[in-house]
Amino acid sequence: MTKIDLDAVTATLDKLPKLYPGPGGVAGVMLDGVVVAARAWGYANVNTAQPMTTGTRLPICSISKQFTCQVLLATLGDPAKLDDKVSAFLPQFTGTLPTVKQMCDNQSGLRDYWALTVLQGAFAEQPFRREDALPLIARMKTGHFPPGTQYSYCNCNFRILSEMIESETGLALDVLYKQHIWGPAQMKTAVVTADTSRPEDGVVGYEGSDATGFFPAENAIYWVGDAGISASLSDMLAYEAWIDATRDDEHSLYRRVAVPPSFADGKPAAYGYGLSRETIAGLDFSGHGGALRGFRAYRLNARAARLSVVVMFNHEADAHGAAEALVQAAMGQKAPAEAPLPDGWDGQWIGPNGLLTRVESGRNSAKLRHASGAERLTLAADGTLTSPGVVLARTATGLNLKRPKDNTEATLLPLAVLDSANAAEIAGQYHSPELDASMEIEARDGAAFARFTGMLGSGRMERMAPAGLDVWTVATRRSMDAPAPGDWTMMIKRDTKGAIDGLILGCWLAREVVYQRV
Image 1 (cartoon, helix red, strand yellow):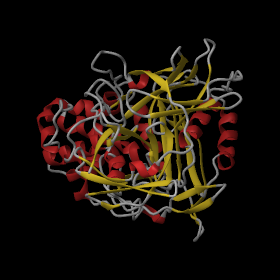
Image 2 (cartoon, one colour):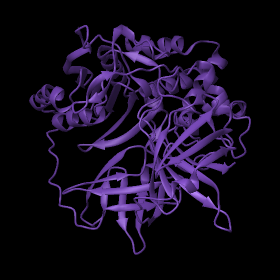
Image 3 (cartoon, helix red, strand yellow):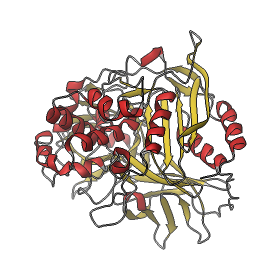
């Protein structure tokens, strides 16, 4: 049996409302299949003073992906049985089509459809109907890497999967969830809330922070398979108990989705069947997070230690950080002292995937802005900057960036910072054959803004800023899904005479989208 420090767990639970401030939240810790501590604090709705309880159902968002994969295995068995169905969802795709297993492992190389809604002209608050998803996905012609070679988070992998499962079984996904997981796990109140405009139990999600204040988040998207489940803390702890009870059964659904995945080259992967893998306090965990504007959630399970943690907020604080803090408290682990960072790390670089990379160093840690969110790096004994998924090393010409979880390694070349550039030069109309969508850049008095237009409408004016020579950023701070894409990197392309003839736009979730000047 694993021994934990229950007093430290209790103390950490008591601190969560202060450490992760917001309207409300719930958290629980299980050991050996038994709840050892749980909390519900604050309010599901601060205007009506509706309390948050262990029975309040909250959107678990992308945690739903593992449920979808378990239903796939329960109903259809080998994912390869559906491989010949993929082409129907990607009729214009010109490259190698991903397999269903590669989609389950986020190795498809497809660009994320929630990120692409920005480029298709969507406002963050507008409705996204069920019938909007497949036409958007069907426009894809290429991926941003060959299937099986890398990892990249992509929600449409699981949206396609859900459509396949319902078509093959003739049953709605919520019926299958209930039959194969919710019923056996005694998740008595779990439901599918595919329409995010109507959360269960009157709960309200809140955007903002302690610094800005909190305000109700307005969501209007329909999602299923990639997300969509709402569940209470009681439901989620029942799920963890079911996982523990079936931990030694190799045929149990969770054991089957928790099998260690790999890339096509045989290297181990950290994500498979809707589950991510990580090591915290010396323990190997499987789990997943969930995010929607106004909501954050994370669950972790260490099979060998029989330890589980669940955290859910109706605001946008770091649920993973809270879950990690509870694990560290349980195992009596304190964060090691961090060495001060030497000078010379700050700067910006461009890599082969066309994304701007920035390093902002502090006294004992640095922020790496490269993927979908800022990553915290600390100094290792060999002089590199590291985090659990990143190794950043200096080279003679720039930086070497290794991301083992993504199966990537790249040389980043330095990019001199520009504070101003000729915005009028890039102003005008552009068209993307990949998306069959357009973009207008407007320049006035030194400032530049971009507006995207496509199948979802004509979006808001997004602020642009020069980053370096022929490199700009386009800031998307709010989008349909959460978190927003953040900064897109825009690389200007010139012809042999130096005239601008197009550009390449990308973020981590949707890289290297080509636009031609009209």
